[in-house]
Length: 247
Length: 332
Image (cartoon, rainbow over all chains, first blue to last red; front, side):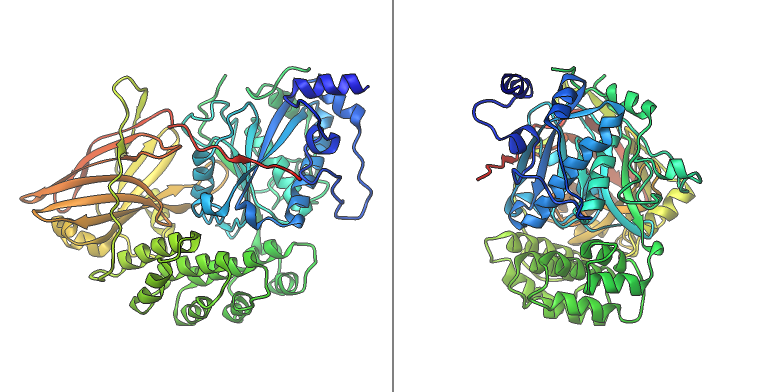
């Protein structure tokens, strides 16, 4: 088992001494995050090994205004990573290496406090992690109005793997409380991996559609449970340029 | 395929799904169905009688979470008016950096000449507050013609698409009535003219340039007055509707009928820079991207005859300059 984990860790770019929860699972606090409902959280090493042997994508989580982040904020990020794997697992899409990056408030040039969707776009263009992972930016103080509501995150649809290409080169997600952040985190990455919303300006009528991850949160029946994906959405994500073959 | 897909989409939540009472309770008493930041974000989109007092309570409480205080300042800036401005003035006394940055920017959008000296004193700070205060001061003075203050005109190198670089033409035209109305609604803080507006389309982006009403009335002499002469609004993409302010166009007059032009983001981060000259009744100008990490080389050449803006050439590269790399987090 230990040799197998080391081999798989090497496959996703982790070498030397590493922490299972920190480096292999990508939890920034190196321990399991609490579930907002108090349910005990568990992760399966065997399951993660299986996912890495199948198709998967690597992820860079970039905390913008990093010196403002509290432990509670990092818990939201860790819970989002935990939930992301659980949401994508049923359709056979794995999340491999998760690395954490920071942009300080001083370096963020005001973009720790985005107030327009254009700011979010600028953020993904000003900063790039030079590796094969998808860049997901978490600005600390997002506050963007839209159509009588609040924008929770934004992403390119079918985002580029060439991070210097024109256009939005990453996904973004604000901090809205663990459950909402986790849903938006998975939703925005779904966009980057090629998924569109499953509705137009009006919310879908059916319960199944409202329970799909790609329904906007304003349409979801439950922030916690409306995170389902169809097999065809899974196939669509599998085709994205960032998806790697199994280790 | 490495996609050049320019579609973007977002996740959102409706303020209408919650009552003011529910949102106030979650904001001030939490924890509830919504986190406090999300409750306040939605409350800020509502109109109700105690709104200024609620925002004041958050903004002026030094023990409150900085993010909530900063959001309060943002909403007060969006509201404008004497009551909101009075609260923002109180916010200038905070010792908390994130809050102070938001207060400065809000006053840049909604303040008056009375706030120039307070903002000027903040510009001396070496931290992000100082930088934000300089932007706020720029926003404020650009809105108030004839204001005397120190302007920052750094000479920086400009990028243009290279000869061998793949470029895309920016399609310039007249906006549809619907786009024009949407774009004007998207910039509610300014009086923008329907006359002389241009649509700019490039690789899926849909933008509209609008002159400021008072600038357009000056004809070609608008380039002889310092300040903001117009704005660019962008249509939100895919399922989203509506327009939002994206860029501002600023003119800095120089001797001999020469002028500088700058294009900044809505919150005064510079993007393009250029210069021009007035020849008789026509002003000609040329703009290029500022050379910065992640910048997209763009070149724009045009002229203005006092009524009509004509773009002779507008093209952008298809590749950015290499962006900055964040620092890797080193865990204990």
